[in-house]
Amino acid sequence: MTQEEGGEGTTGVEGPAVPAFSVCQRVHVLGDPRRTGTVRYVGPVDGYDGSWIGVDWDDGGGKHDGVVNGVRYFSAKGQMTGSLVRPRNLSAGITLMGALRLRYRGESTKEEEDEMYVLSTRSKRVSIQLVGENVVREKLSRLEELLSASLSFLGVSSVGHSHEIYSSVPNLKELDLTGNLLSSWQDVGSICEALPALEILNLTNNFLERDTITFIPSKGLRVLVLNNCGITWEQVETLKLSLSEVEELHLMRNELKISTRSYVQGFDSLKILNLEDNCIDTWDEVLKLSHLKCLEQLHLNKNKLKDVFYPPGPDPQNDHDGHECSTPFENLRCLLLGCNEIEDLASIDSLNLFPNLMDIRLSGNPVADPARGGLPRFILIARLSKVQMLNGSEVTSRERRESEIRYVRLVMVKLQSDGPEEIKRVHPRFAELKIHHGIEDEKPSTQNAATQSMASELISLTLKCVGASMGEKPPMTRKLPPSTTVGKLKVLCESFFKLKFIKLRLFLQEEGSPLPLLLDDDSATLMDFGIGTGTTILVDEEMS
Image (cartoon, rainbow, N blue to C red; front, top):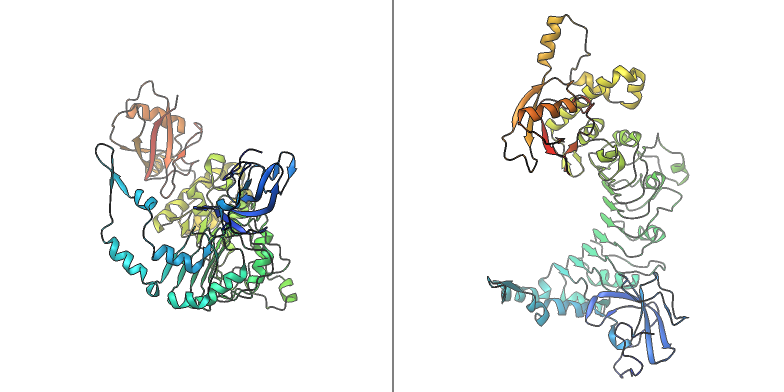
């Protein structure tokens, strides 16, 4: 075996002050509280003196999977997440009270002070001191006045004496314990008991035991963050008995699936439920949450959902649970579905059936990615009748009106080939929007009238050169018929801007969209892309 992290070869002898460790205990590297792991083995190693600790590291960075020289000492979660370490090179952590003293009453360490510098004109480090640093430090040292405490990555592994915590920080309302060594729900309960004023508790990256949850939260606890804590849905179901007053529950990165067979009940005050970056892959799972009566925001980004639908009506199954039927997702206002696998139009249209849904995120799904054949922003807005915030960007009344008109004109072109029944099936809002905006069908007319109609229907475009080799050219506005093809527009741009020997690419710049849309079909018309008056076209050059 090669010398492991922190190892001392074959002659290491443990001193009397080395702490004892046990399997399943949470530890960190001595002097580095961010390097955390779980003890999986305690004992001897063939060919080496003394005792060794087998650690499965949270962030990987080990040297094996628990097998050394053909002998398995423990089973790590990954091929390179395990290490054998001398006990003297590990820490079992400190108490919550010890962390408070360290963070708010201790002096800056030499390492921290070394990091506070600026570079001179000769690239030499010049130490700095924060203005008012001593005043701020003095204020923070008065723990009884603390309302918010951040104790992230300090190696907190136990609570200590509850009465000492309460007497020191009686007014603490927000506590961040991200990345510590807590593993017991009993300790979480003790923290809540010691801090009766606590409203926000963040336990991200503390790997909590999977035994029965027995903890009583602070009566005023409103926000509980359990991101990446290894929590199961069965534990979530148990938590609801203790969290009737919690308004926000964050459960990101726990590999969760909503495994309950019936509707989730309880959580009577829950307004925000964050289930991002889990393993939810069917909408039937999500429907189990549809009767959380106060739920206003549901975060489902980075799951594996393939479709969305609204239940057709009250489900008699709800009566079997002894609860009255209610409107599904009655108060849901925000639904975040980014970076899933949704690709069908029916899922988009079904979002109109949610009674109060106004804030929607669809970015990162095939159906909303024009580069993968998905819908551009203006079509999404037109199809979603109530959306006021799309992909994090506000939908203004002007953008809605312009998007809906562009959409109607786009569909009118398809009427000629698809027929009214197909249009009604694929574009359920078309007829409604056509009437709403007073858009009439095109009618045959005399040549003179047709000429006047063509003039009145010309669309005004702003053309901007953005190509690196085009030089600085002022934007220009031109009126063109909507039947102009992309290929024809490229030829016109060559003439307008006197661009010779440059192969052009055109992009549609849309309000609210982070990236412009490539007009990649030379045979498509401006109307095919739903381009109307006031649109900006970016003129770029092909990349060699």
